[in-house]
Length: 221
Image (cartoon, rainbow, N blue to C red):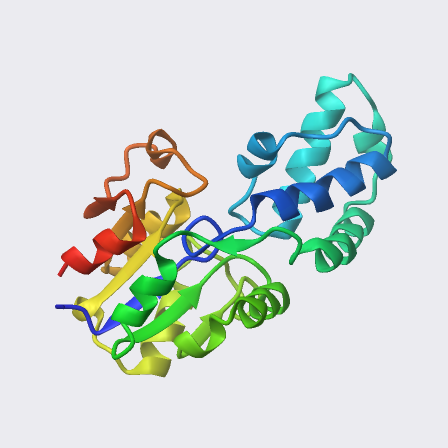
């Protein structure tokens, strides 16, 4: 294969975390007497880190219920509550997508890294539980560097740490931020259709490749 370095997004690319994130979100909404949200609704708000996720869910629920709760909610408090709740539930149902284990085995001799907007603490704990950590040379969470995707700071950090050339590096992800950061950093981009985000939400940003299953990545390069 042509690539020396594979950079993967996490949620919606390697693992399906939707139900556990939704469980934690709904505990927070229940605390503020707001109606719970479906998995699909919560998934729409994932991708920009915990704070944005919590803020979006509370604001949207407040609007839907014509409630003024948003004006009296401490976002810092809500985020802290979410972190506690998610820590308790993050292993309830989270699994790798079908084909991921086989893909990582196929890429065992290649350098691999994770670049996610999920906090490092949660990322590392989930990967440890799923037995994925040993497959990757580097994990860059949303708080590992100062700026989250689509900032290229995480990409540059990974390239520097691994010593791999930019033109032999590929970014794989399911969201707009993944494709956008690849474009900005001059990497090959691969969009996965099985994840959290529909291709329509890429807002016209065109990935270099589109795959429907993880194993199709083997055919690229």
